[in-house]
Image 1 (cartoon, one colour):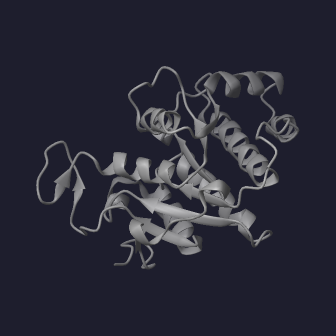
Image 2 (cartoon, helix red, strand yellow):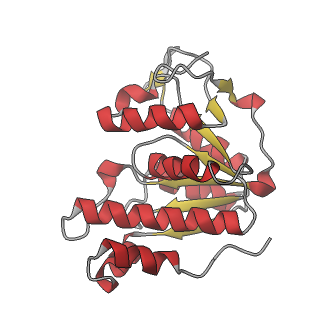
Image 3 (cartoon, one colour):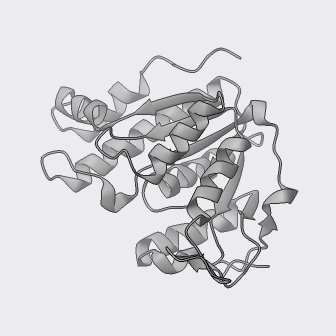
Length: 227
């Protein structure tokens, strides 16, 4: 099986089992679900990206080497793109890109599809949690339709990690991100999260200046446990 976007070989989930003790999965809200700070999308997205980058850096500093992305718009693809960049400077870092089903890219817009292709081509493993190439997400269960595809992707990520980096808002309790975090909590995973309150706070403290924001976030104390 190969990706419909990049043509990269896709591995069944049963064939990819990283060392959980060195693995972090990343979850967070999709781009269209993010409520911007004072309606400023550019500033809000920049702050979220910088926070994601810092959390990934902290994980690497703490000894984590494998990072799992679920390839959704927003948090997933932003973090995956950063991990691809970090791989160029640190050969120990690995990116495991996990798709919920083969046709998932059909639900992304053009910009996200281009970023997805870049991520897929540079991932160490591209994984599909469902081996039916024709299946798509839907509320009704049938041979080629299932409501559980994103859930299965989320559970795979947690099952193969010992920690979770999460961008989450308390107001979105029924999201896939909440599902992932709740499953991680039930299974004893370490959870390192931030939310829009933290993002708004750092934007205000930096007086809406992206460079100052980067400095403030980059100097955050490492919250990951020493390894």
